[in-house]
Length: 235
Image 1 (cartoon, one colour):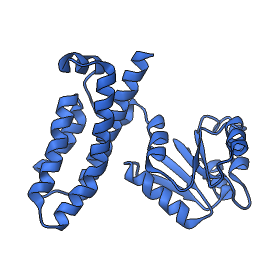
Image 2 (cartoon, helix red, strand yellow):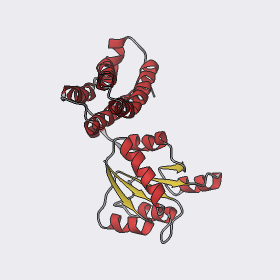
Image 3 (spheres, one colour):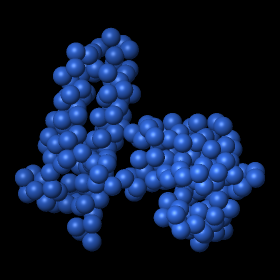
Image 4 (spheres, rainbow, N blue to C red):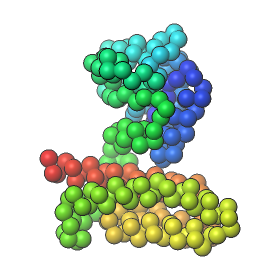
């Protein structure tokens, strides 16, 4: 999945790109303002999602949104506006103009993750057990499984930094235990593809941070997709 980040403030742009990367999306394109972003889009760039600052020189976020919505080749692209302004009128105008969402600075990772999750498709998700089979195997209801999946994603989100800390302290055995717990959780919840990715991490002679982060990103997508399937079945 390719993501376009548009912001004239370098620090804000770097922070947002870091959060996106931390969510497991590494194909990120940046633009210094709306005009630069429009040049890339006119040139054929087709991101799955765009995060765009509201107030910028040359071409503002709202103006870029209007150009995107007026172009049949780009109209389906979700564009999330970001700004330090949180007043009701600004948010209302963004929604009316066709924004897929509105994030107020400073950025929160869960807000970014939510928009990323909404854009990935089944092709981006590792193999997993059908949620109905998981419910029957565990003998629980959908509400309980949704809670398990949400908690598991939080556990996985904290794992990479915890493993890095343990490795830096010279405690590889404890670091490996963290990954083993996640592997067991994947197996329990029927996330077979994610379990396979973590098994490969554990089979390596030493834990590799980059490989682990990729496996954790796959785990996050898998758990989010299972939750999406469950919610759709319950409505």
